Image (cartoon, rainbow, N blue to C red; front, side, top):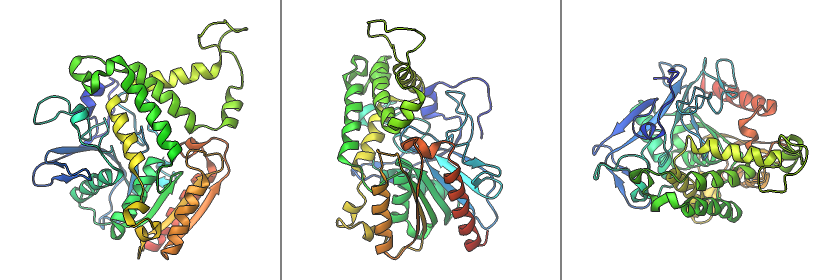
Length: 389
């Protein structure tokens, strides 16, 4: 089901009854999480585009980044805006929905239909809040694998995604190598750096310092930690950009005034921009989910799961990889991608690598980048010919 109503949805309603496709799982298909908790009742919200061929060999799973959702190429029911990767996905686009069946699922711990802290806890009838178990990237991938099983798809033609989505791509390739024909991890790393963990901790502390957070029980108490979540988003958003891009767009230009006000108002355009980013984010995202998904990224360390040797994560893999980074990405710099490529080479995997010139920072993978489009189109085209689709 695709959301095409002009009425925008309630974010809390979206957590339990999303305006998208939905699969529910019961005790017959429990989700066993890394923390040791077993979810006997859980669900996953997703969107699909294109048509699954009779052989079920043309499915592409797109994994979203930190604050994304399943509305990758269709209207978001909360904001009313278009999908977050419409530049990449659609008829005739690099991930061509005339050729491929594209699936994108909201991650476990999210707030757009997949079970998370804003979902109703069946044991209490109240939102989970911080009673929800801590989630890992591997847990997210387990949930996606259950969805793919439910859809009757044995092997994915490709798993693609950037940033946290790229982490999921790598986890898919490590956990289910026989189910991934090709993999496209973009602007990502095989572990979260100390600097990135530090940025996330600042954001989490901003949320938890908001008096309206109420120790995670704000949904029950009818409040929202909007100020804390907004500040967290502002800080994180800076890491997605580059200094040249900020300078080109804003410089030191003032916002709707000719001189400084000698106050703490948003005198500069860049200040106004960040405040807008924070306010608009609060409208669509759950504060507790922000804590959970940032923590999942922090815990990700693929080599640590394999004796500290990243190559072992891909031992014997037959998956075809294309790894891409961006020159101005300081959140996941090219060195992170090179480490992945070196590990894949050591494992004897089929891998290509490209560092793309861009001054747009980490967010470049989401934006109009012709070289990324050409790379994706070429990689998927060659892989499709190899698979005969």
